[in-house]
Length: 316
Image 1 (tube, rainbow, N blue to C red):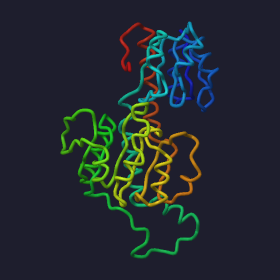
Image 2: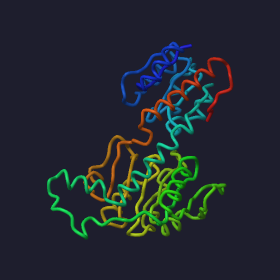
Image 3: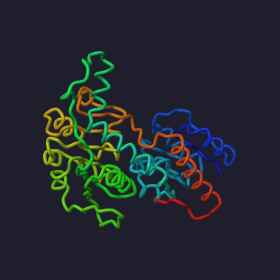
Image 4: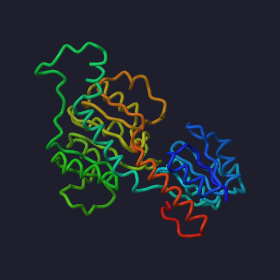
């Protein structure tokens, strides 16, 4: 069976892939074009897509008899894949849950601290050569310890963030989720997003992307937040209405935001880049050698199980 990996992976993972499979590894780091996706479906038994590779219904319709029988996604999020269309074409889909949890939660905490303590703004001040020295009221930010955090989504990643907030910073935790969660720490399940947004000091977005959550964080939610509150997004860019967020930040309707994902990434509006009260990261959520290797091995485990005719470890 022929295997196609759509991005370069860590040396460890590529070495294993070449040892175990008849594999082609794409050298380009950009998202796959429509022609590349169609070729992959037509010429390979297994394809590894990842973020931005839009395997939508149109792509599947243009390859009516695909050779591909498995899309082994690199990443836990799979909103770039039309799973129903894939299954209708006889193609199974897997992902890499678990491997990304702690690294993504750590990135959320990084952004919470950066935004609350104005770290990005402070670094730019130092680099500009305009820093005049310490004084008692310089760049006063928000002290996170003991504050109230609201999690929009309480899956694996949301719970990992909540644990860090509770045990690491003594924060009060509220969350919005479809069902109550059994946790080993105190947390309140909210019933209404805007109401929770109005109560918390930090609102963290940790829900999957897709049509159901697009612009879940909109102008109404942002207007409900306190002027001293911060918004953090480590989920998917389209969950936050970027135009509404820019307006809220420009008007200082909220104190700040920390973003690792963007609605139309890698394109970022100049208006967002121009703001001092937003911390911006280049989608670093899982960007460690260990985590990206773990994700790659999960992909290869799914592929190995498929080729051997075993039950898939991580079907979606």
